[in-house]
Image 1: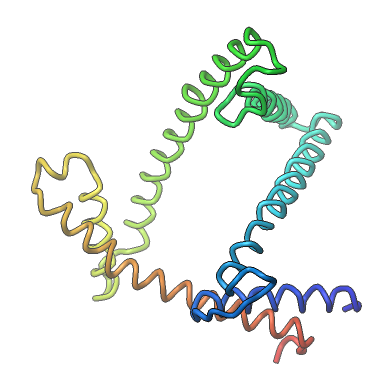
Image 2: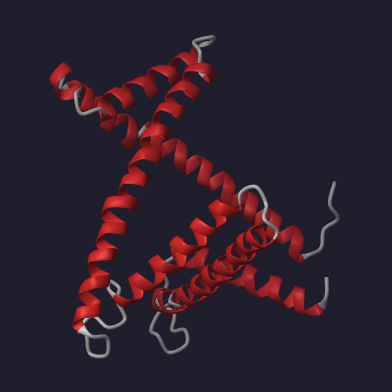
Length: 227
């Protein structure tokens, strides 16, 4: 690694370690004139918005370049690329002009007639198109997960039997008709999601955090791979 990459690795590791200390330890230590570590962490966290905005812009640029190449080279999916690019940029313009996040909600610069037209278009595209598409995809995803779980979690052992039973209870408890069948399904679902599921998620997150920490340290000290 170059010196610039090493410095960047040190900064990233230091910030991650700093947030870990702030999360687990409460110390009234004055930092950067903010009063304590938590205030300093909150102020540093505001810079995340700028970083996410830059990453979002890079994603839009890459998406535009990839689909523009599809259109330019007349690849088999170029028509879908045209639809994607037109929808993305038109929805972006409509959201900037007239939406809950409009740049000119009081119609100071943009005429009210233009605002009203784009607001009706934005409402139609968002509530009638986007929300419906999301609902359709999530509905298909639910059936796909149920079928995949049936194939993967067959009752071949005690562990898979427990996992299959817990999954079925959560699915039944989540269904609107569960209260008509037996009100206890909702209680069982809440208990499974609040205790066993939360405990498992925390274990996975802790393991992932330790793995990321170990990877960062290996990268920082340039530890040889494969050992």
